[in-house]
Length: 370
Image (cartoon, rainbow, N blue to C red; front, side):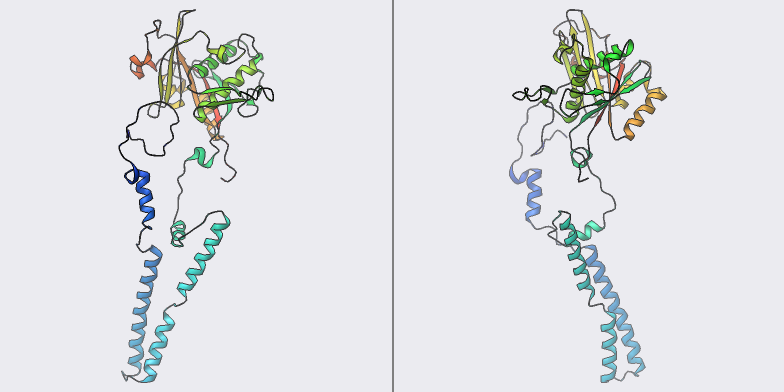
């Protein structure tokens, strides 16, 4: 659907909206209207079951009454009526309603102890019938604050290198890496810098030093964007901090001289995001892509998705409760003119023949209450 409902928060992207409904005509208004009606008057399953039980026992009582009157040879005497009435009263559980009400009251008290106020006791009956609970994870069971958890550099065929794990405060440049980044050499050093460049260029989030608090902690960061985007940008900041490279003193220098050539925003269907760039100094063009591994790997050359070691690495990261993203790039798509734009081509034609750079793992800590 292309409808944006009332009270919806925009996480990323831009657009123009036209108001088509207000008040009770909106979806939120319809919900409020139903709540104000006081809910459904239909009998619950427990109420219906109790009614059926009472009818059944009343029928059993009538059968016994027939036996009793038969035993008295259908002489309607005081003794016969007394025996029949006593049998009927003994069969019907008149205390059942009281017991159910007391049980519900105890359940309400237990729910209140768990900070859940129940206004209608029949709601407890519905809770008791629940067998499965489907819940959104991010922001519901978790804090909704993504943090960088690991970086796995990869060869072109998908062979993973040693996992690099940062350890540092959240929203901060500082980090101690499991392997000191300046010690990386050869292909690892090149891959790390290309991954850093891709993380910075393929992003819509902004994460910068906190203004007004730099004296207290010059490495503290603040920014805007989706939690996942912010975690990836924090990873980039920690890479710059860990490299201690004079040629890359900050994040801005990581994408210096690159001119934008269009963006394919993240799409939930393709599960990817891509950006086009051109460096007039070196006359080189670049397309950076990131997204879900199952979407990125099939678009890469050399079939990295068939690499058993890479699949095993992704499974291990997923088993730790980490969200895994793939980062890739393409350098053979010429974008020399300022008017060149990757969005002028079909998305599948741009996001193909990629070179896998790395896997990035981010963590969303669970809430204490979950």
